[in-house]
Image 1 (tube, rainbow, N blue to C red):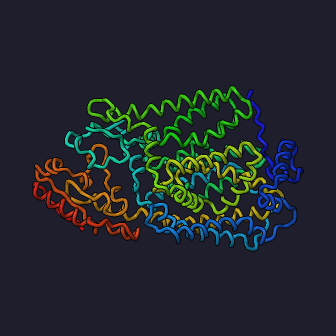
Image 2: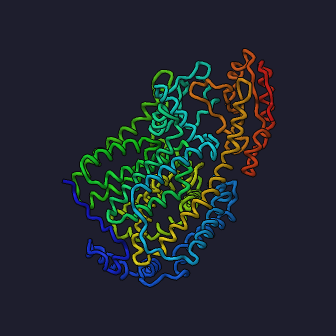
Image 3: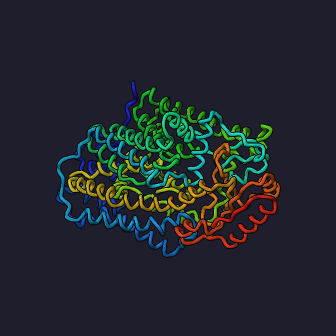
Length: 621
């Protein structure tokens, strides 16, 4: 028989205040809440909860205060940081300048407009499963189409490129692709960023864990790998519905609220257009939670299988930061049998994936021995990440969190705040909140700079936590729910019809310049194309080659052209196009900064050296 969980859920904060909705966990919740009140903590939040739970009709001014004040504060913060920090400090601050502060401002205005003269809807929102499935299918279809029409069908960042690269390797039946003899001593010219180190190199594969790419390879066997992200969006919607129905079995409306918050997240939709591992992280985390909440033996074993895949998607740290606080509940409940099962299971999972890079690194060496295994392990990577800190971790994380807020449903943050209040008294809600806080804290220390991405990628797997906490907040509203129903419908419409098109336009503007240049490079009738790694922002990301290097022209990093490699390229009169910075002007124009001084002279010098070695060279402007 399945163990019975005793979450103090169901009715939320208002039932604790009024003690009128339910007697479930009454004494524990009431005592805890009174203790907090006696200590005088969280007076402002408690006042807001009292206002929400008031049975009289909520005024427009009160609703504005509850929903608009904190998003407005985020917008003010974004503009203040932008005024103090220039856009050229790093990509996080560039996004803050170019995208996020405006999205936060527009979102705040839309929230205020949605609140104005808001009618009350007394009828509960319908909670059938069919609308949830429809939402997931529509989001998946939109993400698939968006990959081509919004992101120009292009893998822009190195993370995306490595996912597609590894998928091609796995689809060929290998774990690493052997390099042709001429490239073994010169692989760095092909761009080996985020690949296992080797000297000399026999093969190449990325140093990410393999299962995101393996999913793409598997789907690519029957369809296009581009479907992977959209299918993960659909799976995530189904699993979110399942989680909500497990937590609130008597509230069909709760499931609708969660799915509308899910549908209004541009971070979910746009990242689903990419090859990032993040859509799979979110979907698998929600599947894991759905299984965990069932509390059955078979479901726990299935959850461990899902956990194995989730840990091995990309980086091994992401899923444990989600699952750890939830598994801690087993100790609080004194469920030693399940706790032991998960402890043994995750110990085995952790050991396997920590061993994986040490083994794979032997496959890329010429003699099959991991000569540089010290550089392949995750402990070394962690120490290197900590040593690389530049003192801007807090600033980067603030920018990340503002970006996260800017790419979510308009009502997520106000409801999330109410849900965090509930988490002080509800163990499951507390575990969900702890997962968010743990991830933020850990990433602030080890990797506060996220680089490319939409929203905050390293919280993507925990968007389900945020939505579930928001539903907790929704459930706490009590008698004042009528206007909130109308507000949810209005803000969902505003998110999808106003904010999402703006976000898609921003995403297209970001991807289109390098996608256009990459297509032009593909059309060049030469053997090799040479590009400077730092000629313009992220110009190194244009240097991407297929595993077999069987696409013409091969793309090379200018700074990695050694005399021996130049001699090899030119011995048979190879044709080479050397890209000058002016060719990359669309990227420079988008960023508004970043052209490297001396790049023109460097390109001309390399072109002259290639001509002297016997190559047929053209300078491309």
